Every structure is written in structure tokens, then in C-alpha cells.
Length: 184
Image 1 (tube, rainbow, N blue to C red):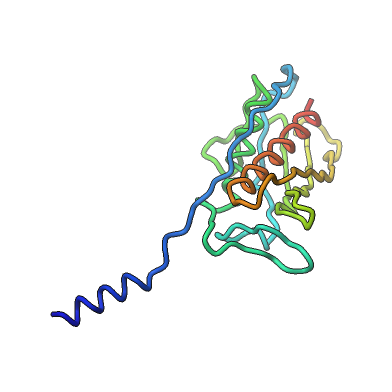
Image 2: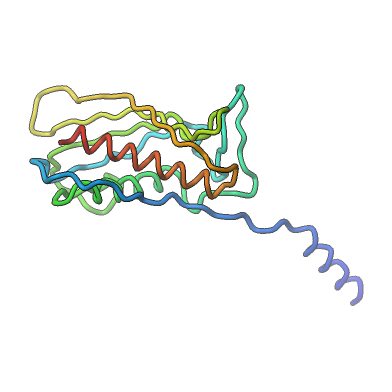
């Protein structure tokens, strides 16, 4: 009996503490005046492979990734980006229905929005960098999609994971501002 208690205590001591879970958050932005766009479908967001992992990628400097062992995303990053970016757009585009392709809503949208996130981490100077390609296709037009590459950054006030995630949320909000301008 005593041996079982000792083994149970040793097993409890050797387990690592649970990870800290984080989520991106929508950032309030300036609501644009209502435009002609009544509905926007956000296609599944493309995500660079190095970001697509449970551990939070802190930086990509000097050909080396720094990924946190203890700090993890609370949900898959691709789905979280879609959810938060949709919320960011809804706040900026009153009167426009914004929905994600991967969601339960299906309709014939005025605009199809495609995003490819190529970078979302801290650089050597301590800034969070978001590099994304944006394509906007008006469904009623035969014109090719409008495409842009957008690079945004936000300074990190500290090295904490909470500040890193807040800065990532901020650059995602800045991207929503840019996309709203393109849609208007």
C-alpha cells in the first residue's frame, strides 16, 4: 500500500502544469458609413504552415522559430483568425452582413474576401508583424479580383505573451481597417 502511495506521489510530481491558453480578440474600430456592399463572404483564411500549431509562435528571427511550450492557442489558429476577423469587419461595416465560408450561413454574397496570412509574429526589433495578401472579388462583376499585399506592425510593450497576443489582435484590427477601406 505504501509503495502505491509513493508511486502516485511521484507520478503527480512529474506531471507538468497545464498550458496557459490564449485567444485573439476583436478590436474596436471606426465604423464606416454604409456602402453598397450588403454582404461579404470571408473565405477560409490561408495560414503559413509555421503558424499552424497549438503553441504560440513568438518570433521568426535569424532563420529560427521561437515557439512557446507553455503558451498555447485556445482553438486552432486558422478558425480563430476567421472568427475574430469576421467580428472586426462586422464592427467596421454596419448594415453589411459578414459571414465566414466555414460557418453555418450560406448566401449569395456581393463580395468574396480572401486572405492569406504569411506572417504573424514578432521581429528582431520587438514589433509584431502581420504580412497578408488580400483579394476582393465582386461577385456581380466580370472584373478580376482586386489584390493587395498588406504589411502592418505593432510595437510590443513587453515580452509577455499577453502583450504579444494583444499586439496580434491589434494588427488584425488594423487589417480589418484596410479591408474596410478597400470594400468601400
